[in-house]
Length: 273
Image (tube, rainbow, N blue to C red):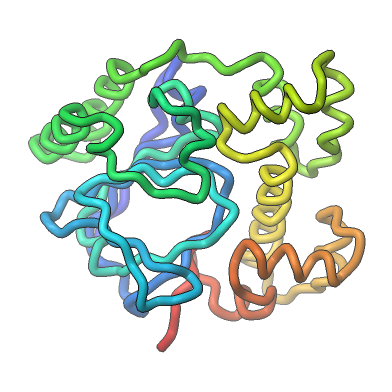
């Protein structure tokens, strides 16, 4: 089993959180539920089996996406099969970071996975082939870095209002409301929502809810015991019912189900038959 991670240099690092490489199927149950993060990512299977994603509500339903896919920003969990993780390469974007690399607005990918061939055509196959030819993970990362820079379909920048809002919304703890941020932008709420969703893939409200959920996961992930009422209060939920509703919406689990099934990976929860 091998895992490697690489943070690219500027200007790419402002948009790509990291490249990662995994080899060796995890020794966990066959399927895992992945939590939404509000960020997009690219997954490339370096074996010859097509990637398949399962419906989090109906594990008998799945869709095939070829050997590489773009997973858009999500507010919903999805399920993967561990047989697909023998040898995998990934590109994880920062919030809004995928926008410059695709001609379609990020809102078109909300809660969607798209075969990368449909978006990049020959460039998707070229990226995978060049990664396969690289003899080490480090050379894979450098290859992906050069391909991504060449693949940019737009300037490597976001709208100033989106950049400002993301800085506010990604602070920990997150204290700014969408209204607070909109009041500082000098643009109408409707226009701000339109621009933000186009570039980030979610509405500002949905993005903030997902980030708050992620803050909860980070708060409890390594904790030996949890006071859920205090966690909910510290994370900005106005009551326990609100907290549990959001948690179930984003994970399809109760807080205790997540905590009792958690693994070393924050956003991966094994599904036991």
